[in-house]
Length: 80
Image 1 (cartoon, rainbow, N blue to C red):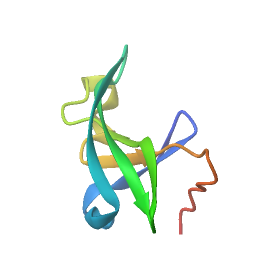
Image 2: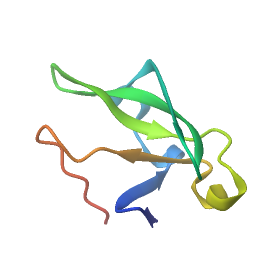
Image 3: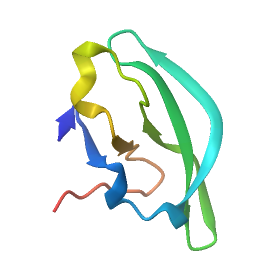
Image 4: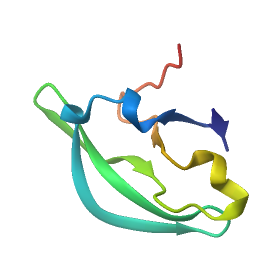
């Protein structure tokens, strides 16, 4: 699923060993409060690279249970 140019994947499809919880939270006017993870690849950590909405607003309810990744710092998102 793609929203605002970002691919949102089912959370259960992501290898949780690659994620470390972040304390960062941001608020989107129409989606709600986003929570973040740091992404770990090999020995490198990408700070606040992954986000999700535990309780998205009604307008964004289709992203509940989904997770998205920033495409920066050499990280590419490929949907297969």
